[in-house]
Image (cartoon, rainbow, N blue to C red):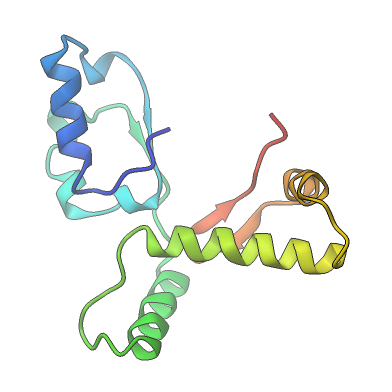
Length: 130
C-alpha cells in the first residue's frame, strides 16, 4: 500500500523502473487520492495492476464543498488526502467517545479493528487486527 497523492505516483513508478522493477509484475495498492487524472494518465503504460478506491461522488463532493465553505478557500478544492485525514480523525474520535474518557489506546484500536467498515467521505474502510 502506498499512501501517496496522484502527483507523487508517477515519481514512485519512475523509481521502480529506474531500479529495474517492472510495476506490471506486481500489484500496487493506493488510496482514493489516486482517483485523479494525473494518476490515470499513465495507467495503460505502467499502472496495469494498480488498485484503489474511487471516492463516492456525493460524499466526496459534500466534503469538498464544506471544506471550501468552512476554510473560505473559494474555488480551491481540498488536498486529495484531506478526506482520508478527516475520515481517520472522525473514526478515532467517534470510537474514543463511545468507549469513554478512561479508554486506553489499545482499547480504541481494538474497537476500531473489530467494527464493521466505516463509511467515510473517501469510501468504506476499517482497520484490520493484523
